[in-house]
Amino acid sequence: MSDVLLLDVMDTLVRDPFHDAIPGFFGMTLEELFTVKHRDAWIRFEHGELTEDEYLAAFFADGRAFDHAAFAKTVQDAYLWIDGIEPLLSELRERGTPMHAMSNYP
Image 1 (cartoon, rainbow, N blue to C red):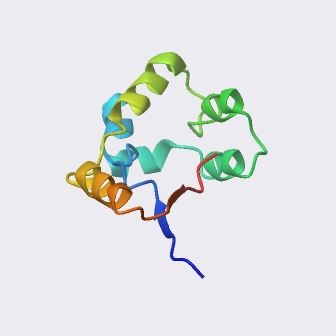
Image 2 (cartoon, rainbow, N blue to C red):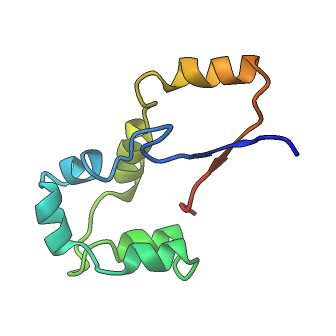
């Protein structure tokens, strides 16, 4: 039996953009975003019930429009390594530690 290191992606390897970048894109606080976003659109997207386009169209409970391309770029740009994780991963790789990244994101 060999040891394998399983790593979650969000807030383990990279910063989750949901808490800062996404509310910031809309000029809101996280608390304000929670009051206006669709309650279950993300869950339906995670379960494969909505395409990405359908998810973005349903993002707000009131169906308000926003620039989906600019939103996607903001989210992509916000994925930053957690401080210190890159050298740690390099060291583990050099030691031959088998690693796999896992996520519940689609």
